[in-house]
Image (cartoon, rainbow, N blue to C red; front, side, top):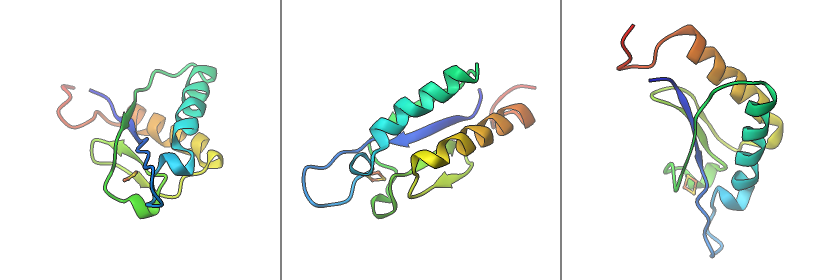
Length: 97
Ligand code: FES
């Protein structure tokens, strides 16, 4: 088990805030491009709500690590850096050593 990045891609067709409305779907593609360009092996999981819709786009390193709010494309390299750091530094909970 390794850490993965969870990205909310919830879209709403009302004026209510949603992460997709803030560009999260496009950012998933950018994340995949960064991972491919850097030759990394990482999992991106797309879900439909992290429960903090007013602060989106939201992403989270799981299990049990950093939550990111108001994510912009400029933040993505740094988020991938952090995910790579966790995966290199420590096993995710539940992982045999
Ligand atoms: S819509 Fe993304 S956290 Fe709810």
